[in-house]
Length: 136
Image (cartoon, rainbow, N blue to C red):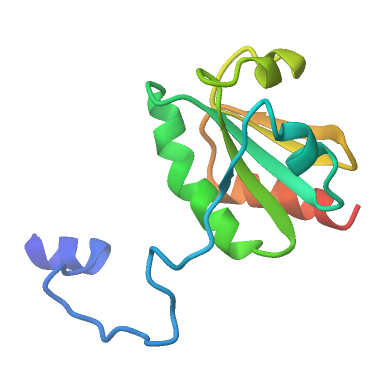
């Protein structure tokens, strides 16, 4: 059984050589953190598509999608603004967009909301919406 699990999930003992050209976790692009105070300037006034993850520290589904949001920041670096907004510390923006549950990821283009995903979803679900709006 351990051999099967190792094939399925990978053997933690297996050391793969590090790719010197790949950035470390600390060097990877990361989502930006926005607040009620700078949301207008950094998100609504941007000429790029923005996705904004509205989350809270106590929200377990928010923690489930956090790595996905980080991966999207890497994948779409320079083409999409990937941001996070803590709803507990910034209540005005969620109220402005009628947010009723978190996590909610807003897709904002040209200063207006064009789409949203509520709840935990897969990387593909988030990326498909980005692709839909990226060149629209």
